[in-house]
Image (cartoon, rainbow, N blue to C red; front, top):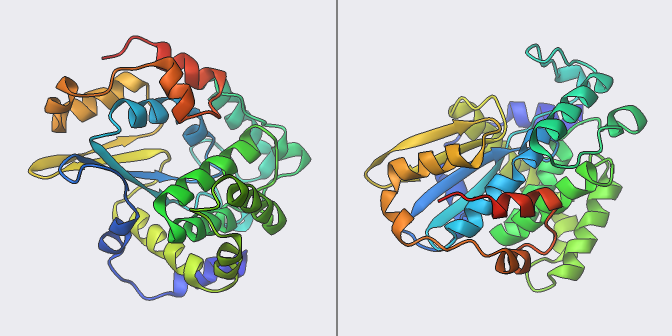
Length: 277
């Protein structure tokens, strides 16, 4: 993992934002573009899934989005969270407990005692390898990674675990995801190069906390929302750059939502039922 860290740091600089624009998921080109800065190991990003999925469903016809991997944990040799006083695995568990308590999302915090991940870099690269096939495949794979560690306590810093999750996605979405191509890209430099561009974009935009959402729309100033936030805060940000969308957005329907996100947790379904406009 230290070798991957060195490879990322030693690459020449390019402008990553324009190159990453091809990863957008969603429909209308004249709607709102969202860049979601995150990491598979980020407990607050998992905690934010109810709000994020509600936003996706609520305004699905007028949003485009892409995921930028932040590289939260290079390795424990290269990690020190002075704000939360975390510099070794066991200290991460209480942070995950807090995220679960505040958000209501189930989180398997014992992994930081029983089988702590050594890094998030390889899982970030795996997400980029899935994204190379399609934005939808990347999004599905990222969700499966989150479920694997947050719900089931699987160590997603291990290649064997990442491959197993990819096999699951290949069975679920054979038209969108090819396991052989994924395995090839995990071994060559394509996934690593895509992750390097994400790391550059994170640094270029001064992102130092996950989740972070960057809202963009033509002729409007961009809006940055950082950290775990309730749904009303996200709506307020959207209203600032797209007030017209609140006349045409999709009405919330719990059964339709379940069909769209059949793997929803109880907390995610609870968020859908909240009365927000």
